[in-house]
Image (cartoon, rainbow, N blue to C red; front, side):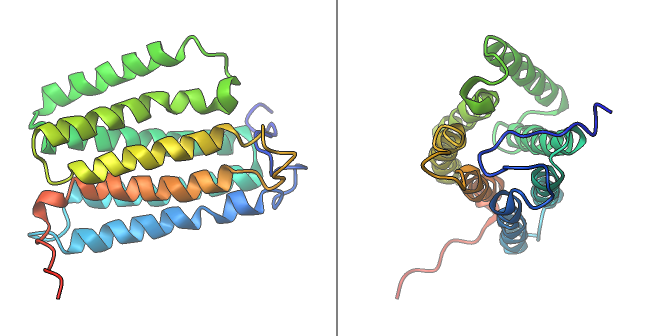
Length: 222
């Protein structure tokens, strides 16, 4: 019974019906678009698409599926699919950054992922579950993304600018996710669908940042 329990977390949902969150559900197309664009950029890379970039694109598409199911069925099982697809992208992306940009091998990557897991638990533990409309759980990814952007810049990595822009966009999207319920009376459709659209851009920037060194230089303006 627990897995089929209804979940109502967003302003747009007004009843348990399948299409009670049309904007939140349909805005997941943005993730599919982002996945396609990542693959398109990957195709321009030297020696063709790398396996990890293809994996990240697949995980972005999986996020679209998980989020769509959550914002239509709105049950505990669908929420878990949504959450797990997000976590999968975060850990795979972090692992590949540590390999590609930081130059770590398997043991160092494992330690880095473990440190991130422990730090994220410590950082979010003091918050009650409903704090900031649940957005507190995305604070660790935001801080890590900012740290990766800084590290990439220090290394003069070609993807540093993309990571920096991704950090700014993610901060804006997180703010909009946070005010979804607070603005509900003035904005009945809510702001969560904007979170989807902006996060699709964040994921595109992050995934293609790992490719930046392998991409051909931009053609000069005419």
